[in-house]
Length: 213
Image (tube, rainbow, N blue to C red; front, side):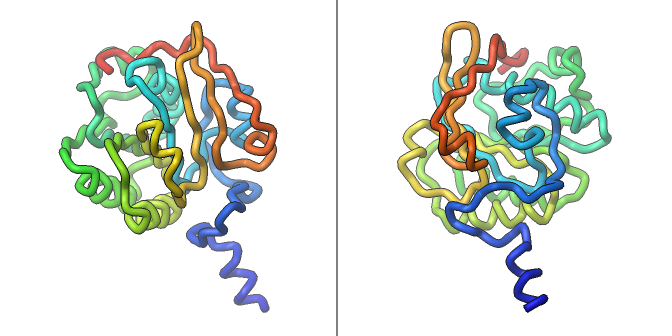
């Protein structure tokens, strides 16, 4: 029974709808106290998170700036896989994100983007990964990425188009974002039980886009 209990507690095990992070899961701070509370402390490390929405450039990248700053200042690398626009790193540095910690990777096909993401997550030097996907993705590839994220203890973020919400995903958390006045409105489609079950949106004020994105 002890061996079975150990297996059931392994972070790489997919539990279907049970996606509440275990107590003590390490996080990077989101910089927004209400979001930290909703996420169980901050952006989880060792987990795969999907951010679904459009159009790009409405603050969905700035939303992660405090997390990226904390990650870079802790000495970890940050991987950007196929962002829609080239980041202006001096502007990022003004927000506390060390430019020398950022690695930009270009890839045209989603399969190549997922492969590059997996390779970065298997390198312990990376503490955060942001990857932008364009269309439907094979669930087997997402499961591989989930496993790589769990083994890396990094925070893995996938930006996906809103229609991806209609497709199943093994991601630990899925958040849908949309522009809302002077900020972003976030809905939890999958993740921590309380926020997901309530169906209540969370408003993050004025997350302007990062320079160059």
